[in-house]
Image 1 (tube, rainbow, N blue to C red):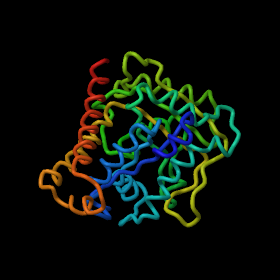
Image 2 (cartoon, rainbow, N blue to C red):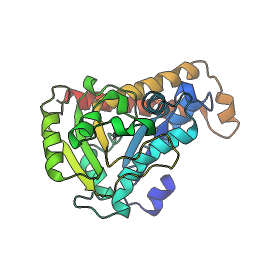
Image 3 (cartoon, rainbow, N blue to C red):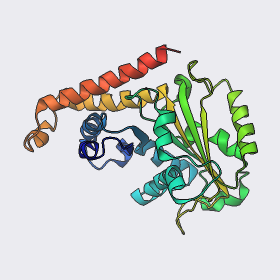
Length: 286
């Protein structure tokens, strides 16, 4: 990312970050790697879409009925989000959103650039014909914890910005009605300095799923990208896991023998503590 910043300083840089979870862990040092990565890319990424493996694991298990989700199941679910975000690059649409608009509409301050991702509907192939998938239904589903791809509770914070990316058989009239209904909900709270809150994209190309995969093919879907102060909860959880190991200096020798210095860990952790403080201060400015 640093090299990209040097070579393409004026280009907008978007990043997809998948954060670890205990139930599908490949390495005990994942908290170290996550904090170090977040720190090293902080100044070089303009907008980082967050996903965590624990939330994805639970969606696969509870929504899709996959007993032991594999990386294939998890990656197919994440790919739906990536596909929705980048659909405007591939397909024409009446309300397409340019990639640069994500930074413009979702990032109120340079460091507060970690939108949470949500996708709906997430339906297993065997339940596809029993679900009512109207635009209001899938829009409301985006505000349910069970469809979030990061483990945190938005009701404990406030939204700073929200982008809804619709695909398939969707018309603006239905979207406007769905958003109006969501604004009436007391559980959906926006900061007072950004009362409008919603940015909408519509692309008529319906979502595509992997043949023989866990997800059902649907006529319409929506991906929500929301910048919320509640995401600080996810950072706090990750920082805590880092602290547990770092307090014992556990596994540090592997990094030091590769040429890193212990001070780099302290610096990264301090940067993430500052990020938590940034979210707290934004939260106090309601």
